[in-house]
Image (cartoon, rainbow, N blue to C red; front, side, top):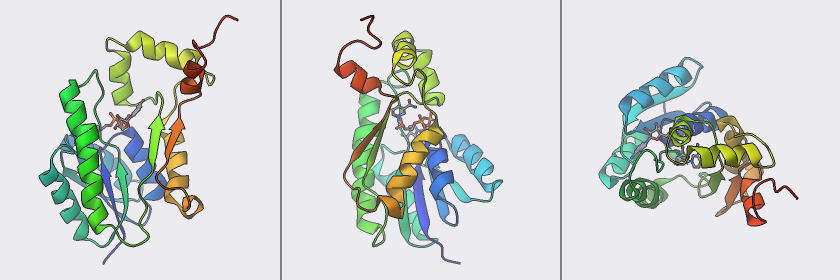
Length: 205
Ligand SMILES: NC(=O)c1ccc[n+]([C@@H]2O[C@H](COP(=O)([O-])OP(=O)(O)OC[C@H]3O[C@@H](n4cnc5c(N)ncnc54)[C@H](O)[C@@H]3O)[C@@H](O)[C@H]2O)c1
């Protein structure tokens, strides 16, 4: 049976939270460089009634992106794309970050743009502050750990965010209520960026 298809890159916490929020009734193709991550998240979601196919894919490779798209097209029209794959400075050198997060994202948008169904949802960007996920935990334990811990402790919200709060934004952007929002970057950071703009976090005075 044909279903609407949602492509998801990165089997991480943010991807999963978004996929759970908007992926019901869809065939979800979930790609990750670490196949075991894709399989783990797929099992959690399939046990909760979703329809997820885990697959190995590397966002920094056009060939791999094309393979993800080809897998999705087997099941129906590609209606949604969530790009949640990425690496952080404590996980990878700058060359790898640029290859995955910048080049890979550009190629993904180019290639999915050629095949996404009429009316499909894409093309907004969520800019999260500190969201507790394995990636953020690697940062907490890395050389900039104290900087990040200070950032969330002293930002107006006084805490880090959760992947489910990012999914709240994605649900708006990807659903009918967000149909007039496109080409936007939505900041969700507990007020940290705005605080830095006006000076140090939580100034004495
Ligand atoms: N967590 C935060 O505080 C935060 C803040 C800003 C931006 N982000 C971005 O959000 C996105 C999601 O991260 P998360 O916090 O959910 O982390 P996460 O660690 O839960 O998930 C990231 C996933 O991406 C996968 N991945 C890494 N390189 C890949 C590649 N080349 N191809 C395919 N998959 C790959 C990892 O194996 C991992 O499963 C990332 O792009 C990250 O940079 C996160």
